[in-house]
Image (cartoon, rainbow, N blue to C red; front, side, top):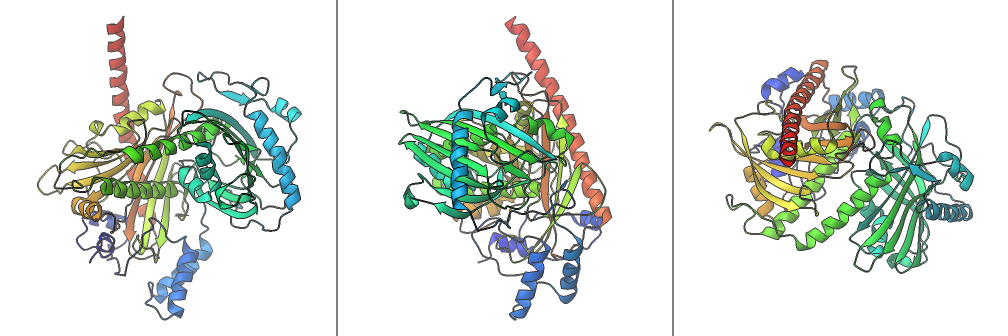
Length: 615
């Protein structure tokens, strides 16, 4: 049986294969070569190569074992040469910075770490609940947010991670919320690294538990558990480098309904690699309520390297919104809402060619799995994880990266490119998200797609929503399928899979096109087949603390898309192709700005009309 993934791989019958048109391939400066055939199987979405070193080692291993080679000798030489010349890194990182997340030591002074987490626990208990003079109101903010008084902080607490280093900036924030979950379940999410990274996948791109130093309660009880962890955090933009951090996490139960989970970096008591982020005592206090909810007080307090952060994002980071407590607690609340929704959801499906009509629950489970992988791939594309930056000085605002793939169970062997850009808009995040989320405001996805006209707001196509799977109490938190109706008989209908999230700090919309037959086969099979989904989408951030009822005065919008361009991992994107991608991204940005300007004008008109009616 030929799977959709294999159809995509060999280019037979797959109408949704995300490729450039022939003319566009020529403009990129290379031939539209056929993708080599190979066996494809697997069940984990998005697991793949990590750049040149993986490609070289895997090719050499295949050769030594007498297996079929995936690259010829010339390609192997090119890759070996490329791996020496191209340093894979996230855009904006210092030239001399090398990630240390995988180089954490394993010999510990347990007594020193135990004393450190004891002091950190006491500090967190105080900082999470007291107000003046430690926390004072943020000047100019209308949302009641507070900022840490650093002078008072230094007087009240010992310095557990050392002084703030040159080039580093201190960020502190706290937030409280009620979430629909028990304290024990929340602790399980925070202490299990797999569940933790999945719950906060928009923030955590990589995480591991390096060692468990204490675990008196065994696998079923985290009370007293002390573990050493490493993690990498990201913001949805290429202009803020990812943050690696190495820390201890400790959990303590005060009563059946009262828990604390605290993080603190080990720099002061242990020889650790140089990291971009040091955690001062951070974490959360959890109190169980009688109605099935839990009250959470969350604190984030870090020193982070900031010399290479774009000026456009510094206000966001200093305010504590970028990686702050509000973003973490919003993600946790959303996850808890999703779990409640998953138990009770009934999916309203529109009647369309028997699509998912026969198996409602199975259908939405498959769609949710696909959407989760799609969003994960989107986030990795923005962060640069598993990608390498294309060298050249073509644009300061558009980042073009390439990913070389071999032996991946889902993705075909070859090369993918991604283009990402971030812009400032003079509209609130709510207005930007509302516009992007409303499929009636656009008849085509705003980010163009290869193989079709690069029309952003084409009047020839109409989008119909086929189904919507709620992902929480907020109606716009959902996974949905849309049918893009062909504008003429020469075109075929396309299915649009989309996930949207109206997070108060970092809303996003991510989508990918599927051919109708592929979508039907996949869903009706219950997910036994797998598709290669290359995402496009938007991530919205405020440009600083809220200054009005609609949020801040401006938004930071990131656009990103991924494309499969060639069947050879040794593909080199020429300068002409690089420039062409940048031109297309800039064209898209201008069209989005024009559309948003018209949208905001209509909003202002409606607001003035309503005001007149009220008065």
